[in-house]
Image (cartoon, rainbow, N blue to C red; front, side, top):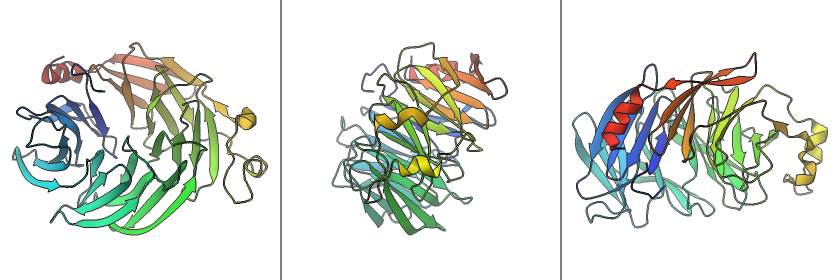
Length: 349
């Protein structure tokens, strides 16, 4: 998303209630629940924004510049107080920041081959986790009831692996790594209850659901033609899964269908304990019974609102709301969101 006429960053908060949208030198923070409205806006003078992310209460925004200004290089992470409309601190680093997330007391900074946690109070490094090459900044997280880090999910140190890092009272407790694909991992997402982890294949044809200890639970078939997966989203009750992709079809899978049997899992295990992922074993993959075409051709992102409503936002600022009917296995599109016009005005579409 590098076209100046397009949104270049869309970041959903872990709570699925806030989304930070960046276009060129401006960001807009939208509240999605219980009603949609704009919480804050800000623009930089003579500098573009690479990405932005909001705290749960939207008081603090973190962002990195795109390097077009000496004041906002891609190696600086800026903390902005949206209530006071002022920059309060800058974390200066040696390497370019690919992505970042903010918790109540921690900054999560993603670099090409590692993730580093920093204390918000004094900007000191807390923990470092090495990863495989991560140019896309693949990371996901859950927060506890106080807004501190509970779970951090990212790439493992080996190709095709991921690592799940758990925290107690916001402090690092343990981590677990396991293999989820033969090739590079393209997308990851952890469910709201922390019990399911979804990964997508590089080709975008297959989704796999694991539990936190690495047991394969489900395999889903998105389609047979390759597609780029843009993002994944679980419902708030962790019972539904949806995604955005370059096929421009919205798919929904219920997660209460048949879990893989022990016999099916045995066919996918090597002697060293790693799963074997092969197209010859695809007969047990579950295809989506609920799907609907998206009425625009540009890139877009999705997010479950509550249990059965899906928020869709495109890089041209178009916003649609979809409803999932589990009884009839259907997805229906409602009216355009009332906040779309406000967003379009703010971002000058």
